[in-house]
Image (cartoon, rainbow, N blue to C red; front, top):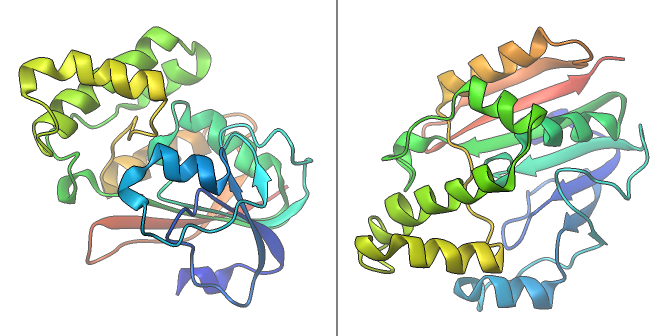
Length: 221
């Protein structure tokens, strides 16, 4: 069990109704909203036991957390919701102590409602990091509305996807901005490993028999 590779006290980001089962860890829950606000944001979870938010913060920045303050960070199906994944990874690394570990899991696009979308390229991720642009963020909402919400979930007729995209944008619904499979995420991490200032080393990884892949990364210095 990859969570057994974590130790000490740390944080789990965006657990919602599915916190990780790791009783050996001393953890607190971080989210962008209170439980009441999360229930309003996600009416589909109205009957789910959402965990209490211990700290309100933006998952990409973790601005309320000091450098080298955590033994672990759990980001279970979180990175695909980040508009700027490289910035998110940099800040998850920033708050870890040397030797601290990141548990990261994400869905494999081929086995989810994202299967009709194009894999996110490394060039796109670098552009999002170096030149963040709300207009480009908005385009993610249109793609998600058209290929997922309308086509897969049939929330509206497909020719009304722009209307739905606007509704999701106005609400700042937490969509899947980016999509990967195991191989493309490996390539993404390999690219980052060659970047100046990258302090993570891979400890463990695997693609599950289900619909996700998991990485455990350790801060080296």
